[in-house]
Length: 590
Image (cartoon, rainbow, N blue to C red; front, side, top):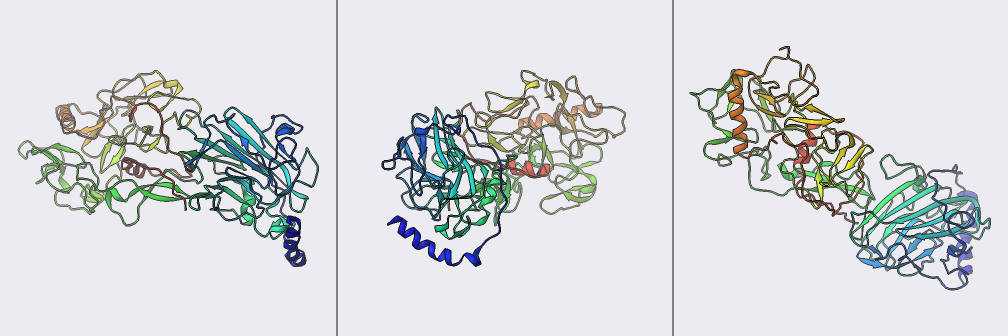
């Protein structure tokens, strides 16, 4: 009956052969498949291979019985957790997938979601291995070892026993290291050869057209699934030419199953974004995976107003109100500072304003719109022209440590490396993601360059390539800190600015420079301003540490491929990062 049904479905295809012939697609060969697992072709011993068939499943060593569930506990002792359920076995199906509830004989890929059939499908299409050529083609084998299962569809043809086009692909299930909960695992799809998309009984002609293959994951609950966007289109052949791994070889796709949910199915997660229709802190978001694309998730809700340079209550006003600081202090550029007294005066070129802040004399009568500041009597961007010391960035016109007061979820940590594209943002601790070459994972979850491991620098200095360097050092033609401030011991503090051509070259190594940029006749004022900032809970780091940790060791990892193709402007990174409080990375499935 099955064969008769197949022939009936072939009739309209045969009638349309003359007009439906499609152009021949060149062979697409990409990443090599893993082998060395025994058997005549290296993909598994004969008792772990599927006998030649059409629409069948693994049926034991002799291949003569019914479909047989394969015990996965030799690889994963506690089973695999997949969309809320834990499975101890799986079915290996000829048509390019594994299922967990029962064997699957359906040859035309149905659009996800599919009821009652939890599935992982590296290439769900009409595979037919009856064309012979074993063991160099038409073999489907699996290999199980502790912490890993490798399943290979080696140079398989399509229905009806056609071998003029071949597909060569593989699925690897593996444990996820130490940063997981029970049942978590990783999935890797490897595509070496992609030549056909469709069997003849699925509307295909010469292996193309009709209903092409589908790639992805299905929870089997009619709700949750992840499918590559090229699925069920002719573009599915592009899996041999593309990758979802930043910098990955063509044909390499990786996914993470965390808490039973698929992560890593999209690229571009973890980047700052703007939430439509929101103002202030509420408008700051982070991209998260939603299916195979990203969406901007809000990371802040309205909070009480605070003197920190942000619109915390999301009403479009920054640091408004006179009650944000103690009675003797005033909010100035996101920081509570002592009120100036007109009779005591301010630094040269600055005047005590009615608000009790020292401002440039030329700016006394200038009112700038939101998001701008006055400099030299003119309104300019709040951070325009402001250069900051090492490990600081400009916020509200003031240089601050962007990780100060950032609270990261779980065991994420704030990236305090100003050379990183994620500087000031919450990222998974290094127990959950490997450090770059030449770096080592520290107990606090940060990566440290090997040359700087164990190196302790004095206050106001940082380690670069094993040498302590002054955090106030800068290029000869660059002035650190906003107007009216100087860099001292790695911080911007109140003080008169020395001319750029003063003839004092900043040191580049050998430790901190205690008097960097400091003019001796205002030293007392600089110290007073610095102490006032500390007493008022200022958000400028003291410069005494080189890293800012966010809790104890361990992991409750967030997942998702964070792929960056551009470097954000420095100020934008700082704003997006400092507001990424209580970030929740959840993956919504459409």
